[in-house]
Length: 315
Image (cartoon, rainbow, N blue to C red; front, side, top):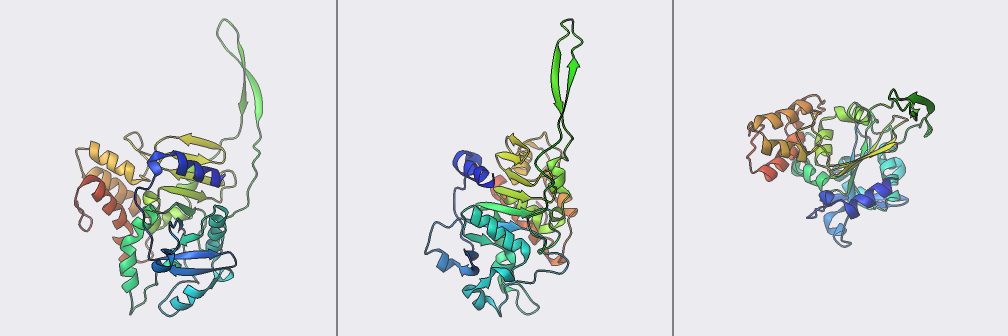
C-alpha cells in the first residue's frame, strides 16, 4: 500500500514534484546486511540520488548509536544494522521495501556535538529544513516514544464489526433504505497529532517541510497513514485534496503552504506566524539552545515564498 501511494504521488501529483535536487553532506547507504555512512563525493558517483528521511524521538536516554568525530571513519566503512536502535533498523527495512537505498538520519549523518566540537552541527542544523523538503519521503515514527520502540506495533485487525438496519423514510412513499453502521474510529489527526512524536520540537519542522510523509502509528485501527501536499490517506479511507491550503481550517498548521496561503490573504503578517509559534510552543525542547534552530527552516521557507524578511523570531 505504501509503495502504491508513493508511486502514484511521484507520477501523478503535480503539487508534490521537486523542481530542484539536494544531496546532503552524508547519507546512510543500505547494503542489505550492513549499512554505512557515505559522504557527498561518494554519493555523487551514482546519481540521481533519491533518499528518505526519518522523523522520530530519541527518547529520554538519547540515541545509543551516533556519529562522532572519533568514530566517523569506521562509520564510513560499516555500521552493523544489528547495532542500530530498533526504529532505525525498521526504517531501513521500510526504505528497502520501497526500493530506496539511501536514508538521512540525524544521529548518523551529523557529527554529534560535544563541549569542544560543535562545528558540524552548526553547519548542518540550518540545512535540516532543506534536507527534509528535498527528501523523496519522510518516515515518521509517530507512536514511538524512544528510538528503540520501532515502527511496527501490534495490529488490532483489519475487520470491523458491521451492523445492518433499515430506516423507514417518513415521506408518503414509505421508502425503506438499508444502511450499515460500524464503530467510530478515532480521527486520524488525533492519532498522529497526539502521539509522542508530535511533542518533539524538531518534528514540527520535519512535518511542515516534508513533501510526503508516511506515518507509522501504534493505533491498531489506523496503522499506516499518508500525508502529502495532494492527499491524505490511511488504511481505512482516502481523502483527495490539497493539504490545508486555505482559510477553512482552524487546526494547527502542518504545511508551509497553509501558512503562506494565509499570509498572502491576511492583512496581519503576525497572525499566520503566531499560529506557527503557538503550535511550536506546545512541543518540548531537549536542548534549549535549539529553540530558534528547530523553527528556522520553516521561517526561511516562508521568506522565500513571501519575500518577507525574518530575523531572530521577528518579521
